[in-house]
Amino acid sequence: MTMKASTIIYNQAMPYLAMVFMSFGSSGLSIVTKHALNRGMSQHVLVVYRFAIATLVLAPFAIVFDWKVRPKMTLSVFVQIFLLGLLEPVLDHNFFYTGMKYTTATFTTAMCNILPALTFALACIFKLERVEIRRVRSQAKVVGTMVTVGGAMIMTLIKGPILELPWTKGRNHLGQSSANGAHNQDLVKGTLMLIAGCCCWSCFVISQAVILKSYPAKLSLTALICTMGMVEGTILAFAVEWHNTSVWLVHLDSKLIAPVYGGMVSAFALYTMGSVIKKRGPVFVSAFNPLSMVIVAILGSFFLAEEMYLGRVIGSVVIVFGLYLVLWGKSKDQPQSKPDGVVARADQQMATINDHRETPDPEFISIDANRVRSYKNLIEGTHRKTLEV
Image 1 (cartoon, rainbow, N blue to C red):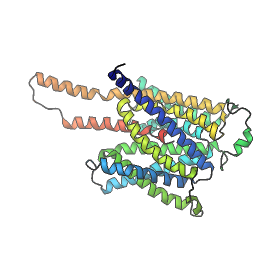
Image 2: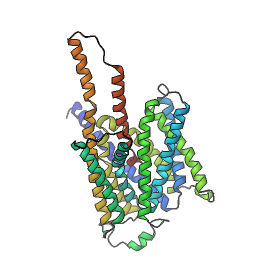
Image 3: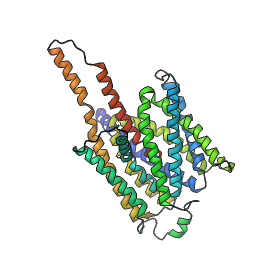
Image 4: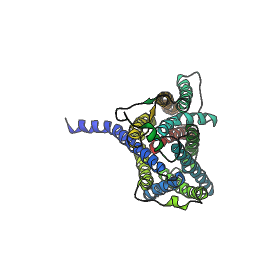
């Protein structure tokens, strides 16, 4: 095998290997986080510590790499970053970790697969995405959204019998269930918290696509959002946990590993996902979401003694089916952003042939570029959540 052939195979395999490693990393984060919550760690304090670590990791890179492209901070941009930090990480992660506390790591990871469908629905409400119901791609996204919601309802309302795995046979389920955490499981309350967190994340994605037009330095924006979220999260944590200051104490156990590991995974995922999206597109990244769910289910049954129920497995499969319907519809949307550019180039060629010296309308090209960029940011941001589960 020649060197050139080896390089081609390596370049083709790298996106797949990167996504597999990322799936294992995010799955391990779910297990560690759930274990820390089971040990009594406050979800509000966990949010603060996690994004303090993320800020420390991201800030140096933002300072070094964005110093030429970072725009001037204005009051309008500061207010937008303040609101973004409130949506994510403060509200989103507090809802999310509270939902995880009342459910399981596997259930939480499965519910995160509703994010693309939920973002599509909110984008339609805010008129950021147009639904052409006669086109197959729009029908797929609408049906996929409804199927995803149905799968979430199945997971919440239908429990079914326990599924015995080869390594869980003979386990004392009653004893293990009582040891699963300080909070008794409450699927309805946990599901509502997770859906609220997903709504906050979807609103964050839509709002971020808007602010990136006035503040295009993505790395600096991410570091500023993490910093603002840490400050706002600290205020919230003090307000909620004012009577129990011991929750801020951490030792060399899962309560320390969870925020440190979470901050590191967030920074690594940000870089890796950006590289893979640049090469293969956002739909390729989203296609690996169910892999994290499977890994978390296996690791959760090993390390957290989590039980698998038939109803939840069926609901998960339904959610994944709806997810792929939505992703298929979105993949068919991407080529639709090219015709305007093709037409503009064709007009230029025709103008050259006919000796016309008119130049294309720069405002038209700018509007088209902004629309394509906003849609790309919307898709990329939607699927970043699974990496942080």
